[in-house]
Length: 386
Image 1: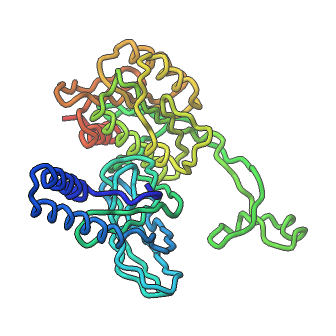
Image 2: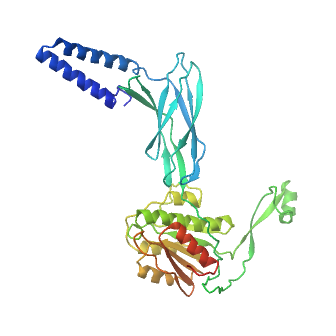
């Protein structure tokens, strides 16, 4: 693309018309047709001459908003410099976000000048989206030719799933629609390590003997060895969730997991089919942003992810409907988790089933993320799902 001067659709039309006029003028002997063909050829040559010289510019892109939720604004800034001694006319720079083109118009640059142009990035879909590379383009005044050259590297835009307000599940208790709850044992604090003091630390945690020896304030770090983990397992099998239902399921998983994160509760997220090796995700929402459906329809894949989870806390499984055998197998894990909640996201054309519970286990069904989180909140608060 950079080694030639490409014609646009309008350019190809003019070239084809010029050729037709030239052949018709030569065959029929009409000088006027030949003259029109010559004029068309001259026009093509003049327009090509305006873009034959590559723009000598240097471009860098900065993604200002690296992590946003679906639909939230994401901004980037394009810095274009003209290191040459000649002015550079207006440029049309093409960027790409997850394969979707984004056009950025850069005004003319004086010799040695530069401009910073802000522009918006599309965030209509969830995902780990690759941004770039940049393509600097020039067009002739008539739009017959366009020449582009790639510049700059690539960046990553994390578009997180929408997070709906979800109540934190009381880990170690079994929520009941009648409001009963079984309390678990209280946790115990255990020393783990020493670290440097930072403003805001409780002075009572200062380890004075080590402080005197090291010459700086250090504090004790402790963890609750009995504090259970909220484990959220997201089913990605296409046999359980179609494409629209899967997006709702991701939002449900993100809402429940983020509720635990916001309250400081340990949370573990397991995604069926996820390959964590080489991943640059740094948070739960990053991982859920990158979650993709898997074609594997074996229900054992879901159960394997459950069995890999750390036992002792709450288990929340986000899956699809219609697999009673899977629900039965999950019920057999009640000795490892307390409680177990199965959130079934059903397709839009299916009717959601009323909630029901077994001892230590509840099953909720909804067709959207909002409905599923609402049912979850009713469950956690001990109310009755309408």
